Length: 429
Image 1 (tube, rainbow, N blue to C red):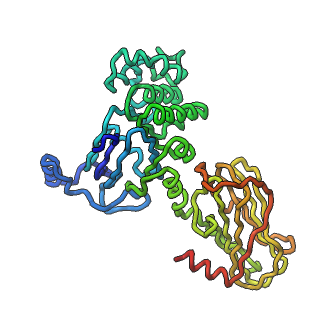
Image 2: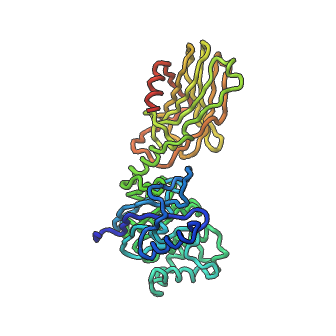
């Protein structure tokens, strides 16, 4: 292993037994035990199945991680990102030696301080002060070393008044403040932090990110950080590892990892089938589908701040219609109207059409937004649906952001039936 490598992971896998422990028969249990005694792999593990929580399997074993390989250099701040169930927390538990891998090995240099859950490593009956010394002793530090850091830890955590109170009486916020202060200030070479900072308030989260940046850049310590907050990952980390269903999907620069995570996630929730109105046979037109896309027509589940995006609406005209208008309204999570836009009045013949609204000028803040859709003719409503779809703006920053114009209304573009055939074919392929 290179002198600059802090952590090296080779062919790491972790399998968990679903349901009751055991194979179901004594002979198979003995076969499994004998294989383990010889240092062989479990003969009843199913090879090649990933940890996809949305699918059923014939196997009673799930691979939370499968054949993970990567290296982390000393002083790197590395983000671990991925959906819930991707294997992020399992990976950190193995790196922290909380649990053992099923196969593979880990080699590293230096002591590891980890913050995996609220109150990890704390004894509830001991006071905050006693737990600080306990955690320091676990890391192999001497009493004088811990004493030298004590005042700094207490000041950072902001719990001086409760320092000699048993931690079982602490709130979850106090727990995480003290736990992070201990992990960040004690002299370990590697700091591992799971998604526990969400328990703290916004001010403390900012303080923690600043401290982790100081630990990584100023002190040259290695930081592994798991979070669903892409903005925090982007601010703190220089590299990132993207996990999908227990497999490493990408490992490299943080901006590339976030872009892959946010851009390439195709989800059914980004394509909304619009229920037909009860009296659709009597209507001259009706909408059937709405999609959230980038400006090239690729489905987006989340949109990075500042990235151009579009809403595509499929609708059908059953009878020739004059002065047709299709409009959308966008409201944020506080039910505040952010954007209202509509097409120019048009006369349409029967056929299938797509209306595309492209957002290139207004920069939306991070939030979840709901879309209201309306179709009308001569200002008379034909179809009107509130909250027909929703989309999320993520706090990962789009690199080419240079938009500052704010509008409250705009004009959509309607493609004719001939054009929609080509687009539909490309999207399906």
